[in-house]
Length: 331
Ligand SMILES: Cc1cc2nc3c(=O)[nH]c(=O)nc-3n(C[C@H](O)[C@H](O)[C@H](O)COP(=O)(O)OP(=O)(O)OC[C@H]3O[C@@H](n4cnc5c(N)ncnc54)[C@H](O)[C@@H]3O)c2cc1C
Image (cartoon, rainbow, N blue to C red):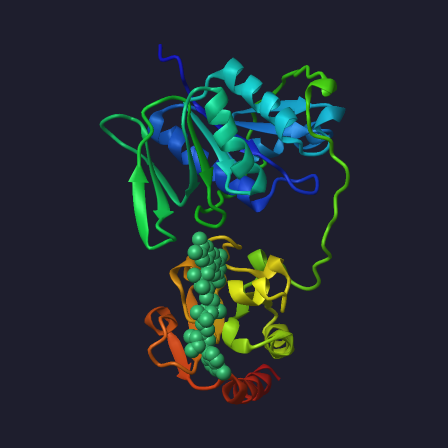
């Protein structure tokens, strides 16, 4: 029998529930498990995660490992790393899936080092190579200008999955499975990090990641005042405002609004890009957008290569007319 068997999905959870990305991890894990003829397990770590231990079963897991205790109240790298490494050492999965989140990005390389294996971050597609039965992992490289397909020759194969790149499965609450508690003993004095405070930024309106319509503004908007007009359009369309990197760097808008390679990955039905040039780093953030509308004064701007509809012109003249038409249509 192979030493490594099965797939383990680490579900970070959010506000006491599985996050949308957790369900995407479970859906992908389920597909890989089917292709390999192996099983999918989930791992939950936290203080009260036992309360939602049956949730991953409904999304395809057949076992759920629960690591619980007061030490896991807040995310501290060293503590979570010990928890995760212990479960992996005891269960020897062939594949470990994590989300491409702050936590996933923090844990995956450390975990790989500790387990003497390798981690592949920010994957957008995963399949099984029929010949070797190892994972073929697709990920953007060179700032999103090319896609690389990689294979890891050591086990366990650790990967982080980009949010919205994988479809979540249909929930089936009738699915049954095993819930297994694993105790992890850690001496708090052995950690060099202390959790001091959590500062939550208040977000009003629809979250960027969940918005069906996104109005993104670029450097050409010129300042925070211009973004107020984008907000008006977003509100009418029941959407959210996003931004390219320069407006965030210039503090015209919050960093939270940045879309792109180093910002958020979104997949709206429609994205209206205003005064955005369309750099590959920005576009890789909304590669999942079904329809892209661009307003730019430069007819040669890269954004027009990907836009389905475009207006060449000064946004200050185009947007008020566009807004008036949208208002008429909506009313
Ligand atoms: C490693 C790395 C990671 C990065 N990550 C990101 C990321 O996550 N997200 C991101 O956005 N960028 C990212 N960048 C930066 C990226 O390379 C670009 O510099 C950035 O996306 C450009 O933003 P922009 O299109 O708003 O600005 P510009 O490229 O300056 O374009 C401004 C556009 O506005 C138009 N314009 C100006 N005035 C008007 C007007 N009055 N009316 C209409 N149009 C007008 C111009 O014609 C131009 O096309 C990253 C870069 C690197 C190196």
